[in-house]
Length: 483
Ligand code: NAD
Image: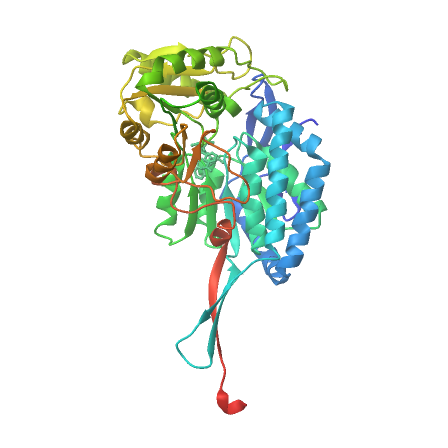
């Protein structure tokens, strides 16, 4: 599968160039070479896409949710049948291996199937009334037009987690694709059309965040916004949505603690720590970027972890462990953050530099010797960089774990049932794990965080239905005189 040299927007079922004619260059992360030029959209293009979604939405809303689910099943079937092709698109755009790309397609298919099934279960409630003869029903109704903005790190999963719940709830969709993974989104829009999704229901607009993302958030005809990306941009979008009283779901960054206690299985903990910190080149909101070690095992863990990290293979073959980061800017930001930390006395135990080859390969990096309030502790780097901290007790480990303004995922390694559950209870995070990695969410589970990691919503899982639908209460009154 080759990525098209030029890529336009997908609006109303057609490929259309941006009205202003502008283009953005998108580079291959594995080689640093120009991969494609994509439409540089602005407010007028967003307006076209929103109009297309608004025109198509009433017909879709009138289609029974069970039938909407059948269309989602067909999309899932096509994605599955073409998993090699879509996996190759994901791999080419991100620089990850084809095996990883295809694995991500599998997760997206699961998501499509889960929400297709929700079409048969779009449950409301019946609520008893204090008034004789009155029955209340609470039903879900579509929000209207959903404006979706996503990050590039797991491109097809990010599309799926928002698109499928939005569609099953009966909405029209405008997606502002991540500028680093544009074709994954366009590919999905083309396949959805082929699967029978009416034209105009799923529109993809390409472009830069400030130029193509903000107009989507402030557009009067966009009823709900869902954003996955950085806390910095999430805060800006919350400011835009606030005065407009617009519903907005924010899935933001993390600085996730991975705690290892003195009674942990160290080899297992090292294996999971490496996966948590470095898989997908650390470009996961759920990455284990703070490794908190009990004093008693600090040195033993450190030695094993450094050895495991140095053994990781960089590259984009199926046998490699991690690929490049997504673009030159991100790579530069990471290298600069490491230099600043070093100037303040931090010690690099592994990595610390880019790999000497073309593309944006960052060596998996472990750092120690800095304070819990230093910049490197407080800032998400979104790359293969993790930091070590020393805890003197369980309580101290929990205190360190809760020591940043983020609250997305958290993991503890311990053989103690009590410590494991107490940690999950006390740690401030939306996703907690005992004896595995700082990740592991699935399409039917709620994912999201607290503090700077989000604004309280959860996607996907059935909880995502609350983001993309509006509840309506219907009162039925029975008049006994009519019997
Ligand atoms: P980013 O915030 O820079 O960009 C994300 C998306 O927002 C892109 O499509 C971008 O074009 C758009 N955008 C940028 N500025 C915008 C603006 N002013 N208005 C509207 N849209 C704008 O993030 P990134 O660096 O591309 O992605 C990494 C971030 O995403 C990390 O912080 C990571 O933790 C987060 N993330 C969170 C989750 C989650 O579920 N919580 C999942 C994946 C990634």
